[in-house]
Amino acid sequence: MSKIKLESKDDYLALFKTINQPLREKFSSGFARIKFGQNGVGYGTKIAEMEGFSRLLWGAAPAIRMLDDSWQQQLIQGIIHGTNPNHTEYWGDIQDRDQRMVEMPAIALALLHGDHFIWKHLSTAERKKVLTWLSQIFDYECADGNWQFFKVIVALVFQELGHEVDATKYALSLEKIEACYLDDGWYKDSSRGRQDYYTPFAFHYYGLIYSRLVPKAPLSAVFKERAWLFAKEYLHFFAEDGANVPFGRSMIYRYAVSAFWSAAVYANLLPYELAVMKGLINRNLEWWLSKNIFDGEGLLNLGYTYPQLSITEPYNSALSPYWSNKIFLLLALPDEHPYWHTAQTEMPACRPTQKLLTQANMLAVHDKGHTQLLNAGQPGPNYHTLSNEKYLKFAYSSQFGFSIPRSNQSKEETAMDSMIGLQTLDRKTLISQNQQTVEAVGPFLIRNKVTNITLNNQAIASTWQVTDSKSVRTWLLALDGWQLRIHQINLDEPAVIYETGFAVENTPEKLGDIIIESNNQYFEGKKGFSGIADLSVTDTTRSHTPVNCLPNTNLMTYEMTCLPGLETILDEGIHWLVTGIFAHQDIKYAKEQWRTPPAVTLNQNEWIIARGAKQIILNLSEGQCMAN
Image 1 (cartoon, rainbow, N blue to C red):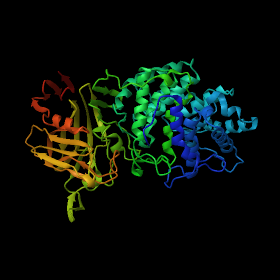
Image 2 (image 1 turned 30 degrees about the vertical axis):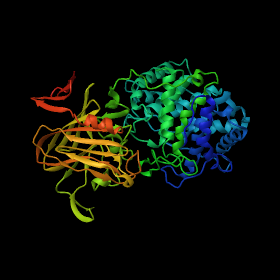
Image 3 (image 1 turned 180 degrees about the horizontal axis):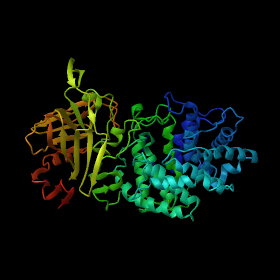
Image 4 (image 1 turned 120 degrees about the horizontal axis):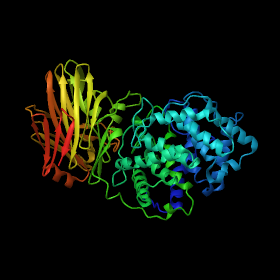
């Protein structure tokens, strides 16, 4: 999409229309469904069709009075037909944990926007059918986690429309939401869930809407206070160029990550100056709109920065990406709201270059426009697609994203950036290498079950329990943009240990260069610099194993990527490895930093990491860390 202007309310409305107009071409004859796409989804294509309608409403409803009559009539007719059991496009009767529950808040809230515009255009009989269809949610079980807000939002809409709902219908939901809350504004998405973008674009988004619907309710103040606390943490997910760091599930929702900032403005919550918040929203939108996120018809595709089905979840249909319309809640602001008359400003200059995100088990690092999230990992079951890759890498990057595998055989296919992989020597596989059939060790075991997590302002650590008798404990630190990893590896048999840095685009049309210097190795290409250095203080030798990963494995590019790596075979016993990682899109700056890697020494039980006048002392036995 060409350069956009985002200043006035008309600018945002024009953007909403540009993004969503292609959806209108896919309306069913009764306007209750939107049909396109040729991919499967766990809840079936019929429900996906109504999902498309509801997700259009996240932006269309706040803008309802600004839309022309054809828009308005299509939306009104869609709601009338979708809730009429006698119409062919009826949305159907729901059941426990039904995807249609996810879509109900958008439909319910649409009845309120624009001074109840849609509601006022419904007849008495039509209103009754709408309420009857929505009220099904009170009779069935919602999934634990952010889904519990769906009952709450629908109940509050009913009350706003003068239809009381027995508080017992949603009291348990409020209790379950409270059970998900951790601290510092963070929620855990159910007892088995993790801390990810569902905290901002689900929990807080709905909590802030709650505070607008019932401002005097005690929980409204609670939800706003938590959102304020979270904003201080969430700022560290964004880089100066507008990119947010990809992490966790539901990557296809893209700029929905900034819906949190929109909801905060909507709820009159200003953890930062309004100009700063407008800058965060605008830069993120501009960053996303510069990527290949639309197909030839102008429809949002499934993927991250390009069409990439392998990144999707079982609950992602072709219509799911339009959840990103949540960002257009801004259009509900009145014309005179100061947001529309405020010029955006840059990232706050006072933002620290490093921030411990305790509840997420992360250490955020900012280095000249490059934001990284160093990651100790979050305990929990892997019940989402590619959980190891989405939640358990050592680091995630605003510039280089992360990669996902095509298989678990060769290094080129696994594309395991920012990870350590273990292979036992007794497991063999045949691979093709340099046009030859080669017997190789495989497949890879990668970080999954993490325990014994320790955190402080300078270092985070966790233990990967590989098997009952194999483990890898890793400490992660940052110094001047460098990422430092200290590994204690405990083996009951010999094993291959393979470790990597960040993957950088390496297109065949303009191949970059791989430079090997003693214990260090880096790649320099058109899209950036990525290096990995062996800083170990033992006599362990690691070989250089850079690879070109397969296309369509990295979230930031569909091209091949070069992935610097180091490999060694370790015998049974306890071993120590120390690794330095540096990567940046600014190649000149990166090469300057690369010339002086941190020096690492071991003094009894203390690791000393120094670079210039800066020094970090890590006491492994006490888990303490000091810096000066």
